[in-house]
Length: 347
Image (tube, rainbow, N blue to C red):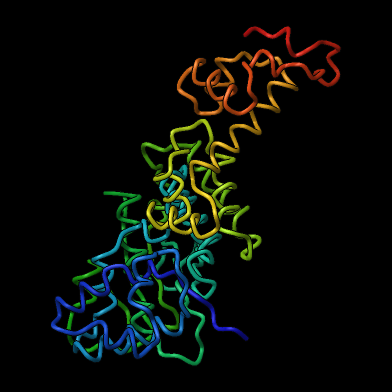
């Protein structure tokens, strides 16, 4: 069976942390065959086993058994890309965790988050269990990193309503209280699972400043874009644009966020496939304009707004470029079932 992969966003801050601790990150990256350049493209995929081995070796080299916790301090919820957008715009913390549980495979098929309403350890708590599916590889640091990232995400989402009662880990801890200081809660070693045990009231906390439209775009994108991983990058951009067009999210930086890549990376990957973001968006606007002009009586100002064009005159200029005539001339096809011509619409 092929080893699961993980997006390199999980190593965000790795090189900086290694240098901060007086170590050379390049030597270990080469040992585990991870190209340093791939860390600049957070959409790149590497074997999860390589990441786990890298973090274990880094902890040993720097003599920092809390290396995974330290790395988490250099990350935030955005490492999850489009999953993070869905989470941040969920109705509640519990809903955000459900999105994370459902779509965490986008980050790595080997990472699993299970949300149980009844903690097996702490009464009155929910249990948020994290698993790394690498049975034959040491992965304590990867598990530490995942738990710590989840801890920070909950703090961001729930704010003061975040109540962490206990943390369980499946390994032995010494007398050092590093874990308790980090999590601000009781840490219970040698338990069956790595988990955060959180007051159930935390999960019912409503999120503020929620953008329902952006959440829908992110979820639709996740549902569509990752059903067929062999699809081209350009088609992934088109899928994201199809749901974002005409909203503030249809800009290149926002689409890049949805795809978990830097805007420059998005541009570079599209150019490698012989196209650009502007060409894809313009082509989509052209196709939709033709469809709505020929098949509906939608007013031109409404159509311009739906296409994300600044005003009616911008639609007119675009139609002349696309079709060689004004929008009113494009209207000529019969509206299905209406018995009227598109040209009757207000222009």
